[in-house]
Length: 189
Image 1 (cartoon, helix red, strand yellow):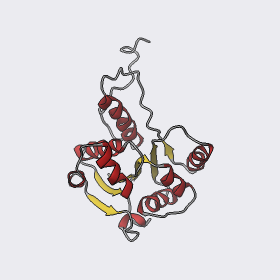
Image 2 (image 1 turned 90 degrees about the vertical axis):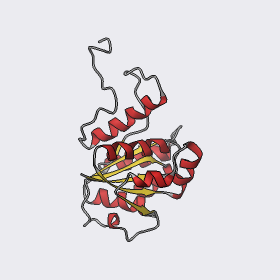
Image 3 (image 1 turned 180 degrees about the horizontal axis):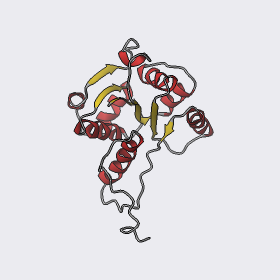
């Protein structure tokens, strides 16, 4: 399996980092694009070092490299995840603006009928945000907001993050035990 991963400047970059770690642990080929603001948020929100993150991915690209392999539909992948996805990036994709490699790769994913999963991390949502989400959803994009469940009785922030990572992996049919799944026998039904 070969996945493109975009991490944008929305708060919640830990979701993207943890997703990359899960893919690395599963031996899945990754093609990473970090936006300029993702890099800034990694510094602000985490203790992670960008050079260490880059060591766990198969390939990485500069967001301005519009000649990268992933900007072409003839380069085969199994899909793309943008985690987290800023509202700016979502707008660019929804409106066909393709202003950087992340939005261009997403547009290629859509036009080639490959799976695109977007993990928005913003609150509250305006009508403009919701309209962009609807436009993308109508074009087959999976909108998977960073809204963790609580049925598994999370005890740590890591448990909440893991829930979103596991749900995202599920969208690609990737077997994982990253999070505790619903079990009516354990959850009182």
